[in-house]
Amino acid sequence: LNTQIAMGHDKLFRFSDFTLTSPKFRFSGDGVRKADGSFAIKGRGNHADYGPLAMTLTGVIDRPVVELALDRPFDAAELANVRVKLTPNATGFAVVSSGQSMLGAFDGVGQLLLPRTGGPSVRVDRLNVAGSTASGLIRLVNGALDGQLALVGHGLSGELLLNAEGGGQRI
Image (cartoon, rainbow, N blue to C red; front, side, top):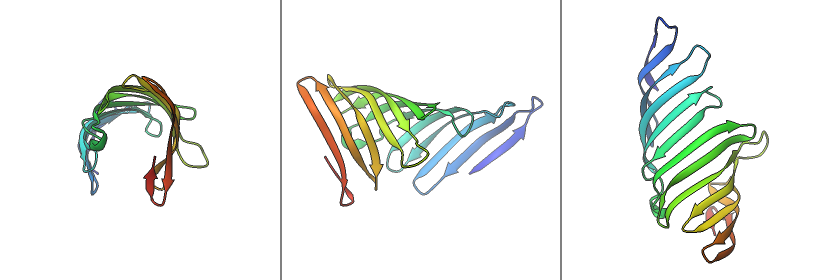
């Protein structure tokens, strides 16, 4: 992390031209730490696997509101122009998403659940795409997805089962 930090006459800490780098990720932006301890950060970056992104972070640093704009985060599904907003709540974060995919436009709402014990999971309350709706619970297990999604609409009725088996993904 490289940045320039200055405290203004208004007693706000401003960090400009900051850059965060890792082997696969680079992010640059500007931000401010307000008198109440909250932050406002805005910037752009690029991930070697997930492509270009823009991010806005506001609020307390350990539970911020995060808005992401991802240009092409998953080429295999032809995801593009993906927007995700994470808003902190008692169980983790509320998630609102939208974008384009190989099946057409999508939008969804759900929860990123962060329990005190056990691993994180995603509760998909509603994911609309191609005239169908999916809902269910998904966990990340050893780098793969595990869980099930109920599918309804546009001629579909059933469940999509996701299993983490043998170091790979099974559907």
